[in-house]
Amino acid sequence: MSEMSRRKFIKTGSKGIALATIPIIFRANPLAALMAPGEGVNGLKDYYEHFGVNESIINQVMATALEKGGDFCDLYFQHRITNNITLEDNIVSRAFTDVALGVGIRVVREDQTGYSFTEEVSLKAMKEAAKTAANIASGNKTINSVELKLHETPSYYNIDTRWEDVGIDSKIPLLQKINDKMFSEDKRVIKSQVYFGDTNDYILIATSDGRITYDYRPQTYIYAVCNAEQDGKRENNYEMLGGRMGIEYYTPESLDGLATRAVKNTVDLFEAVKPNAGEMEVVLAAGDAGILLHEAIGHGMEADFNRRGESLFADKVGKKVAEEFVSIVDDGTLPNYRGSLNVDDEGNDTEVTYLVEKGILKTYLHDKISARHYEVNPTGNGRRESFRHRPIPRMRNTYMLNGPHEKEEIIKSVKKGLYAEKFTNGAVNIGAGDFTFYLKTGRMIEDGKLTAPVKDVNIIGNGPEVLKNMIMVGNDLKINTFGGTCGKEGQRAPVTDGLPTTKVSAITVGGVSS
Image 1: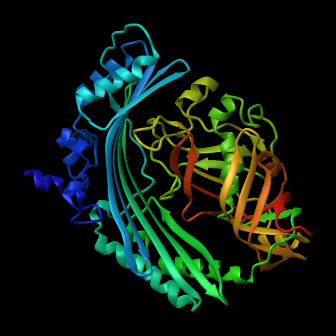
Image 2 (image 1 turned 120 degrees about the horizontal axis):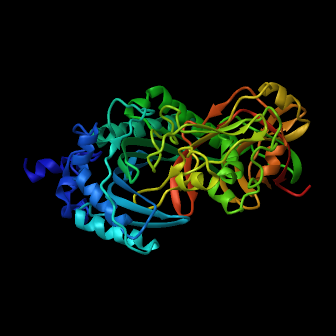
């Protein structure tokens, strides 16, 4: 096979992107870097060949990683291909492809972690990285070879066509359709931006206790921003779609709906009012308002914060933290959702983890290290941004289960309050649980009815207190069609959140002085 034909994996969306865009580091390991990932990377043998390794090479690297007395080590191989396109007012203003390949090596010794990575997947480079990670321990140790046994995993994100097999000529019409629909929806629309991205991740994980597993992880999103003008006044808003899906997910109906919602979210702001500041009842809308659940409550249930005593939930396992009709789960098994995983980034099984069940805090979100500390099983929440990062406990798809109330019943119960639909630009203090969120889309509730849209509103509160003050939970659970990207300790990870319509008895609303 010629070198040029083996390079055809760079067709990932550009179908002709310049060869010069391949990082120079790839040329040090041509077998791993130049294999076309779309051609039958479906089994362990294919993944070995894809990364240019075998069981013997992996065992040699592990032996080096553990030679100073580490308790445990793992190797995380990754090949990521990402494409991004920006369409502004029907013109492609930006398009690029990013390709990354490497391996991260972690060594654990008691409570300490050593981590190193290399972008050159060769035996020499991996052994050098392993020596660096091994420096957390001291001494000499001879490690026998481990028989690596394949750990079979389910598949929560089957797709028809892998993204590297979809050319840019098939993607741009999707963005043009959204652009055209937004302009046709309302004559006040003056500008649009449509952002598109897709990712192919090929993952191979090997652990020193003999487990080896692999995963192919697709990811995609479309983010549409609408700008409108009325009587010299300008407003903007947005809408999103995405998940672990293929191009078949973007149907004409879903794209039209995305554009219509983006326009409506924007033009509604021309009629928006600024509520009076103060403490009031707040109804969290089903779906997008789940980000408050994620940020203000979910992070406090990640095991590392509790292990260090930083979270207000650190001593609450087995205790009541909410009303009996409140149950919260973190779920890695939802088909095609952004936060779902066939296997976590330590090679552990993913699952549905009940954090709060009928008002009682049941457990935390664990990676392998925190699970060992608490003497429990990992929950499949060991996640990392890439091979350049060590795994830490992270959320996946976090949502509240249905409660006993009707949406209409909840809204009718509010004399004067706020209906919060979509948040943005939040800040959370994990230790104290305090948060501030900017409300991008919402309405006033007056005499039990939804009335005027609102704007320029912040809500300020405390996560554990909000959890206690959830006094009505609807039966209309909605999980976001997109989700978001969560930041923690300098790492970003795709997540999703959701909840049913939920009434909180009191949250401070920052509006105008009365």
